[in-house]
Length: 439
Image (cartoon, rainbow, N blue to C red):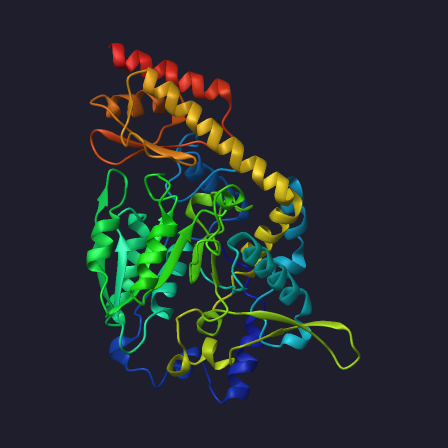
């Protein structure tokens, strides 16, 4: 497209003249001739707005959009009340950016404060921050904030989402932090292996609840082991599950992290999402990102400020303790509005329905010949099946417009159900599974 340059040719020439240049070539006179562009860029010719729209619609039509989804693995389809889009769709919220001038950013700061308060209530910890990009980045930042001069090794459960492990390793590589993986056993972290790996150089232990396979971990036992060895404990959690499962604060975690995507943020082809971080009072001064506090102004009115950190932490690289410098306030606001709309009981119902429907799906698949991979393991709303016909089942579901679970290998599938899945959908998946088993 073209025609959207906001000044005319005459205005451009006048700007050049007042800047002391006679032409655009003269403007670039200090750039060596050898590196200047010769001719035009190899780009297609400009199109009208209508032509661009038609082309984008053509490209979009190539996407496969599933109406029935049984896949999670870190990004989940939950019901989002209409008020979330209505409130956060207002122009003043969509255009708000980094609140450097706190005195004129009270609305943005309040929205962040409300979000942080919600995260503290969910996790059972004393302080939370904002501006973390996603759950994987939050986990990596949490591991680094636990490190000190004597402790530079991080233990990560192999049952943590591989995407999170990858990001933790990337962060750790640049900061000379050693990452050691603790093996999983029957779909959960091997606590005996964890106990053996703990030593005086371990800064923290990172585990996920529920873990990548959907299994419920013994977080209390793992947290106790970490603390007995002098290490911190970082819990990566599904926020919806906290409506029914023990909170990180209850089992003594030092830091809780996760992705806020299940709380009012659509799947959106993978982002943008928002990572959340909460910490105990002893750890809160090490939190990266922004922390908004509530105070009173000189007239005694309620006011909000950026607190506990210097501005330089966000904008001066040599002073920064992390690489967080942007602002995820819009996604954080969606989370706050979602939680306000749902309320404690609404969130609990979403969690209970997700769990009950996942268990019904597991029972139906088991009856169809797709055995649960980790017998005896409790799960929230994700689980793993195994069968020699796994690939055939996913192909059959796809041909019927159903996105099945995530294939982990040739035999195993990671399934997910939420409150969005109906009984009819689940029984249709089971019926197709039975046909595949019989063929």
